[in-house]
Structures are given as structure tokens and as C-alpha cells.
Length: 251
Image (cartoon, rainbow, N blue to C red; front, top):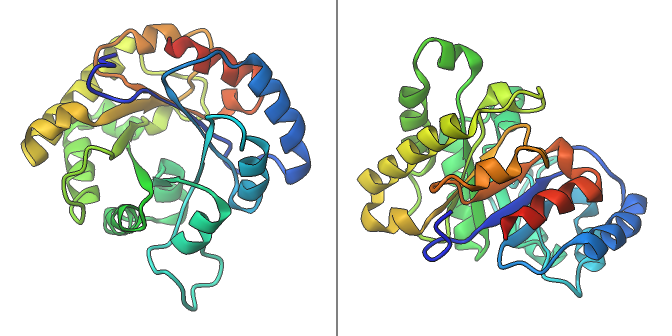
């Protein structure tokens, strides 16, 4: 990792797991296990428990984000949450375009870029997620898909070094399969090259993280890659012991 130019991000995506009653015990254990770090440690819980997570980690450096937002500040959009709501709840990051949002709920790249632009406008930080399917990979289309997704997902955003990109190969999410460190580094290096094409030298200050069956036993190899600036952790973050072991590897 190039820590001199880029932030190191250790993020936990809880997906649709945990209720408010789970939070105090999890927070106590995680804070006991976490070592001092220069990395940004972020938790993305379900939206309804964001206030409980914010309160539980208020005295620490752990940050909180949301898994999804809608780009309008208010309106007749049943089931959505707005950025004013998110800010008031205490979150400071938002995932945009996680593969499960794209594939299960039909989010297009146009929707993702509108969300990311709104997150920046609200003063929060977006993590824009891109990644290829197994069919894309087996057909040799990984780079074409990523180029298209990256370009479209950033089309409404002005260059901003606070942007975070998450590369999460769809075939590795929740499957137990993981891209080899060499494969992940190759793809993330390509993503950075595409950022250079789009935004110039600012690309070398943008953190690009890896997501996809990250575990304590593969974290050190992933972080040893020069272009991987952290991880977005799913299942292994649901237990504080697992997430602490991953987050502590940042240093």
C-alpha cells in the first residue's frame, strides 16, 4: 500500500444483519480488540441501526456509513433514505452501487453516479463499487466491463481525491472464493490507470479497496499489493474478532 499518498480504508459491510440490541456487545468487543491504526475504520450497518452504531462508537475513531441513499433530499419516495437523514443520524460515508444493489435491485450506472454526486454535495464521502460477474471474467471481458462501469459511475462527479473506489468481483462476494492477490492487484492497477485517463494525477491520491470474501487469513497478502488501499469486508466483519483481525492488519 502507498500510505504516503492515499488513505487506508478498512470497512465492514454488515448488509442485512444485526439489530440495535446486537450493537453494544459488538462495539465493546471490537474496541477492546482494535489496535491503534492510521487506517480509517468504517462500519456500514443497516440504515435503521445507524444511530445505535454511531452512539456505540462515539468515543472512538471508528466511523459509520450507510449502505445506500437516494439522491433527492426529500419527497414521495417510499422506502428510501435521504442524505439529510443520514447526516443527522451521524453517518459520514455511503456505499454507492454495491453489486447486490446493481444485480438484485436493478441499480444502473446512471443511478449510481447520481447517488455518488449527491453524497459529495451533501459533504459525505461515497464509496463507488464496481466489479465483474463470473461470466464476464470467463469471457475475457473483465477490463471492458470495469472500464464501462467506472466511466458511467463517475460521469456526474467532478474530480475529487476523497472518492473511494471498491473493486468487488461479483463472483467472489459471499461465495468463499477470492481473487488471488495478484489478480486483485492487476485489476485494481487497471482501475487506477483508467482513473488517470479520466481525472489525471489526482488518481494516485484516490483510495481503491478490494471486496470479496476477505478474511483474516488472506488480508495480509491483499494489503501487501501496492495498489490495494484497504478492504470492504462482508461476512467476516459480522463477528468483532474477525473484523478486528482484519483491521489490525493495516499496520
